[in-house]
Length: 204
Image (cartoon, rainbow, N blue to C red; front, side):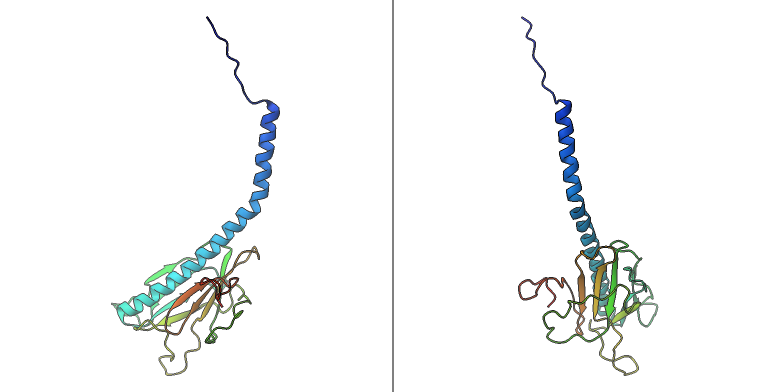
């Protein structure tokens, strides 16, 4: 005996309602997704700079010579080099480098060479450094991995980077990242929107 089964499907009206719901969800989710992308690019740029600083410090200790980390783009795009201060056969001019746009073209750096207060007061990093501020600039690490207090000529070292701010030039809502370089050579990346007293990722 032949049994006829009725096949169920989706009507045109149900299909149109489904497409409308998916379209609405995509429209609502696009701004959040775009902000997430920009935040990721800013963090990637900050991690690239921190990585370059750590490479410079490691190479200085390994070679027992002065090695300099330089942010090279005046506009603030994340381009950097790691070079020996005194170039020799054992210590080349170009140890490592990154081209501009690391982390995306919207992530930009600004620097300060002002000495950081100790201890750093709460809210010290509330004001952002504008993209390109103080650039190009760099910081030198000695054979002990520290930032020298004196220049080779004996004058006070006041031109090494102490702080790097990474901001987004397109969206002001993107979180800012800050990298702090201590006189002992240690580097720290933090989020100035977070209080250090409540979260170790905070700046001050």
